[in-house]
Structures are given as structure tokens and as C-alpha cells.
Length: 75
Image (cartoon, rainbow, N blue to C red; front, side, top):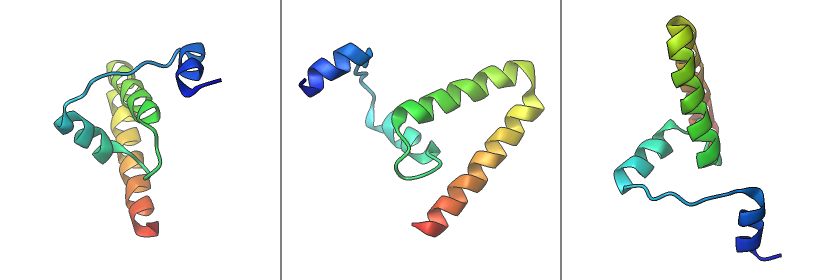
């Protein structure tokens, strides 16, 4: 199975981003090898959390920042 066939069977798609948006996503990664899928899902989860419980969302953002700082120390 080729990579393209695998993507189609898994329902994977390609989206176009400006370099600025890609850079912003890169800056939101908690660790170096975090995928864009993981990063975007994390953002969407926090956005949904903001609607229901803003304090919990803020706490989650703080937790992500701590993880990012720890990851930068290890790299």
C-alpha cells in the first residue's frame, strides 16, 4: 500500500496553512515530535472547555506550558 493509499483509507487530508500559522502551531507543541493532529485536537479541546469551564481551560493551558518548559529542558 502506498502512502497516498494509506492516507485515503485512514481518512487523512491535507490543509494549506500560511507559514505564520504553521509557526504558531509549532510554538504550541508541548514536545518536539507532537503531531499537528495532536496540537490541533488539543487546541479544539481547550476551546470547547473554555465554553463550559474557563477556569479549567486556563489550568489546562498552564499545564501545557509546564510540559513545554520541561520538554525544552530535556532537548
